[in-house]
Image (cartoon, rainbow, N blue to C red; front, side, top):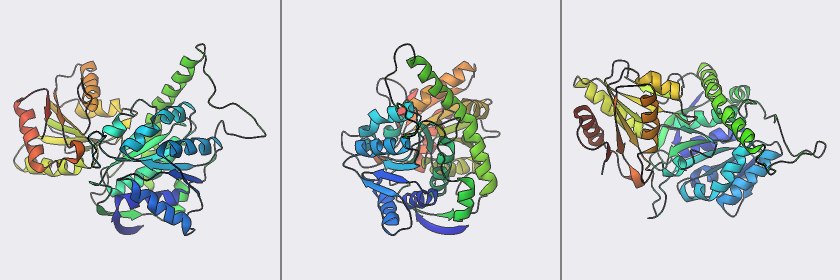
Length: 391
């Protein structure tokens, strides 16, 4: 292991270099730019033997990845916010064609008004496109999840695209220590890509992405749903394999063992925060402070968001009295997306836990320690509305 310090964006670039994709297609957009700039340097310097396609737009980037993946090549792309929105049409097609395209989403607020700062509205809006989604808290998790997403997506029982999401600026441009394993160890964990199914092969011609008549469309879509359900166990197996082969070198840089969720001081907690991404670091500090004051409080961090890890969440929250779901996304006319899914899950389990929704950090608004402490007090005392905005 090589210990180093660099921004999380470059941690992802290092991971991509070691993964050795055959094609990289990307269009720069703040705050994603540092990732693809560094990868472009790797290609230009001969450190990464890949075809780097300088496309005209994000629509072109994801389309190029679709075509390259259909030929049986490992591919990579990255984007943010409006760039992800421009990809939206093709996201469904990539997933429907069962192509293991892997992407990094550097989370940024959606316009209008124009904002280059962080929230989760871009990737959350893509939750129904059939892409696996995982969220990172630290630079180490950015690196690790990037390695793991390929092993998950390329599994023959999954064959679905995936996105690793990290908070723009708050994480992407922040320098943190992390470990880079030897190339040989990465190669053993993630061998050279061998496509399992339909590829563009002149010797075995076939039609890809053809029309699905009403007599077949539902069955095809159902097979996609089955693959997403299959991925729950595959993700867990990959997490276990990674945790066994790449032990923690820097304390606090990642979970001791990767899982769909990470529980922080929740064993005897009566009140639990639920959140995703880099804000979990702030919440952990708040939990430690509140624990020092005698409060029984903890954090459940979601790493996997799609597929939604129902069993992991249910088991973690089964004895909890109060739940505060903190999210950097909104669904106008409804509750927060994560809140609705957890509410539905707990209702189905006839849980008596009181669950509340807190909208935080939209457009890059700072989420401070005093915000978390105020959320705890409101949740514990049952004050305020079911959904509160923390301005």
